[in-house]
Image 1 (cartoon, helix red, strand yellow):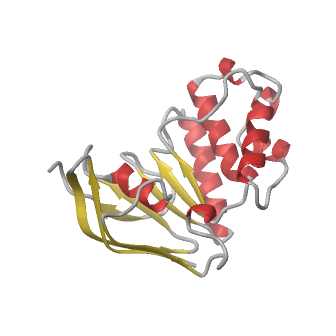
Image 2: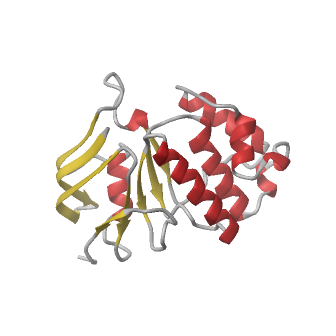
Length: 200
């Protein structure tokens, strides 16, 4: 499986964020998107996830499920953790499993892998910022998708959480997945770097 972009351009609010961008990554690989604030890291991830349309160029996934679009094969983990505070940890995860559909894994096992099994019945409103991030990571595990698009994935995670997440990402790559992550900090896994330009 190979994800590539050729001549990709992005315009937002009438401003060109970047243009003529090429990138490529394949199964078992991680690509770290780096650069200063305003350089287009988040915009690139949103293009890959299908949340924005490119102003030019193309983004293609080869070797995935032919009947599914790239966004249907992609998990997008953004800056904010998309949780419903009134629902329990388990109910939040169940919502995402039902909403995203496709091949799912055991929700309890996903919570165990991110160290939240003890809080399954706790309302999400009571979670710390790090625990909310762990619950968002559990969503990546609960519904299997080969492409992970991660925006500052270690946000709010303490040292133990960062080590745990590095292990989760390593397992995903070992199972043939691929990762594209915008980050200011090391991911904790081997990754090639795509450096975005400065402010325009």
